[in-house]
Length: 302
Length: 291
Image 1 (cartoon, rainbow over the protein chains, first blue to last red):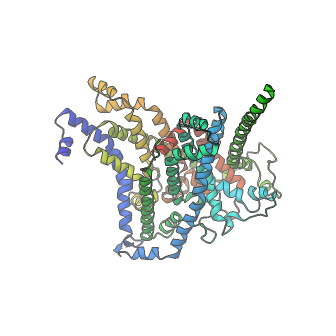
Image 2 (cartoon, chains in turn orange, red):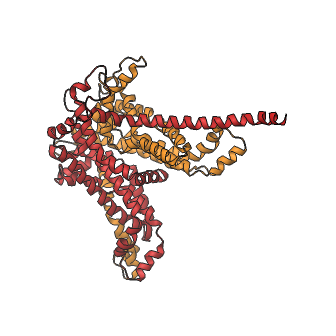
Image 3 (cartoon, chains in turn orange, green):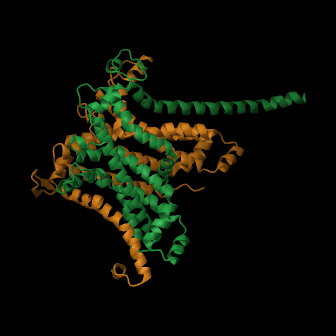
């Protein structure tokens, strides 16, 4: 406390310098405090109150939690979100790893950069535009995908309009958008692996698969975990792709948690219910992040 | 005898070398095919945007447009919707977000990297901890605030939560940390104030990081959808991602128009992205390696 007082009213040069440092970080702190910390506290508070459209609040304890957490639409949305990420996270990570390994083997820098930037391009696109382009490709009658599949004898599918296919179809959009991002991370990590490891393995007569299994993958371990977690978080918060195309349909088959939160808060203006969902999302993602920190403590050392 | 023995001995080695070349070509081919598949939706979008409404409804599907220079969809996009205004709105919001982010983040990065004030490390950890708070969890109170402050449907309202990002503070701190303390001390001996040091010593030495942050932040804000959907209600304040959605609010989506609008919305960001890709990749790798 005394220390802080001295810095607030500095008498000597060093204290004045410390004050300058604190003043430099102050705008950012104020911003994060008012845009994240305070609203988060408010979200938690809202989840205990019933808020009438006029603004009158009534403390209801855990009643809103009881209401939301026993509501089947909520759990359907959670289930849909989990299904979506079970489709997209492993696919994205495995494909990105394969692409990065392939790119890493291309010796011509020019070609490698060309192919890499093609994979990276969707990352620059807005999720809305990406989803709408894919919706056109998925179109059951005039879409390109059914046209292409007709050559291998597959009859037209309904994709986004089908109860069973809508989730994999939307997951594919997420894979398309994210693959380049993950590839870049893997590629950078691959290029930081010293060539000597592979040379030593070659002298010992290791096969390509052995080199992958015993050198590359263990050294990429921390990147793989990190990318998995990043994808998990990204896909858990999925909203844009769904809202731009199916808006949760058909018959709620693609309604996600954030989609439900958005509808609850800004279509039906039930802020209390939406806040319960907000707290749910926060707690879930916090657990995921803490898990990441635990897993990160075990890097591979050679 | 000797030569035969040698040729027998060397044969497997040669085939192995040949196989290795083959494998290299196969990998190249696989990577290239994948890249083309990933690129295809862009191509399809561009091709569709050149077709007329009857053309896109042809069965069986026809790949090429009848006229490769048919730009009528692009004209129609601007006629049907105030699309220029949407582009302008997005540009304004993204520019403000990018610039403010650079200013606040580099100040904070400087403070965190080069000063010893009590509680510095705890505060930095707290800032990084913000990464754990998903924006969607704070959106309801933020909406209420914006409503109370009368900022719904304004540029200030759209840009408010986007002004600084944790990523930016992180990026700038790491960049500024690499500047030798001697430079700063030398400036102090010359009598420069701390703020002057920031402008004359720090900022010029972290230009690459500033460029990176500018681009990434501009891109993120340009592509933002969730928050604008919450704060914006009047048609003229829509940003470009919402503008795209106005071509889907019909019974039959006119994909020829929609794809033209999508091309227009993607093009500015894609051009920036392609010309400055080196910086973007650097930022991605950095966010990747640091988590």
